[in-house]
Image (cartoon, rainbow, N blue to C red):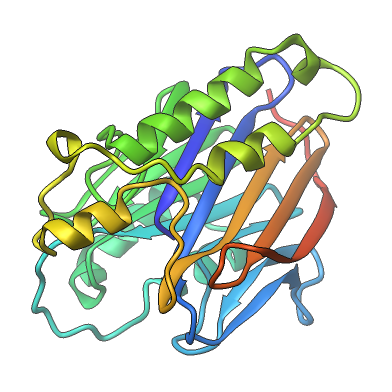
Length: 262
């Protein structure tokens, strides 16, 4: 996962509203989002190369999402970051406990940002430049390939698109029109050079990676996902793309949540 914008406890209807893009090499084998064969209350896509997932949720009121932190890093990677996502949504441990338990093994993973939701708490966990974890404050946030809430060009545009949708009165009632959210994540406008981060990949690559939606023959946006959490239901929609950026399929899932929160 490379771009996540979300609103936490900042809307009268949605406890959590999240939009995300997964950028990846097109050759990397991936299973589309769907129900887990062994845990049908769990939904998400699967990385078939390293295992785990990048964004998953369960009807028990749990969600996890991970982004990589784009920095030069030579550590020996013992485990896939996708394991963090799958482990959390399958478990029942509180986010604060899970986050602290990661402290001892955080160096086993390549640099990551991790978002953990369970009921009344949304928690951030990261291992770069050092281990850190904290509860996310209510509001509108972004998580991409740099520090949490660092507003790069792509994350700023995604937060703006999400905010425009949430602030529209149509989001309050009825069946929501989600196309404006998908349009926000399909934004191919690159950053001007003065707004590019320096993550060690070179100017041409920074330009290529700077838009919310990336199109490339070898690497690009593989899917966009929307997650909306209401009092009793979690809506999970994934839209998938080919190397040309054309839609190849969608998954729509609605999970009945097993409990209600304050």
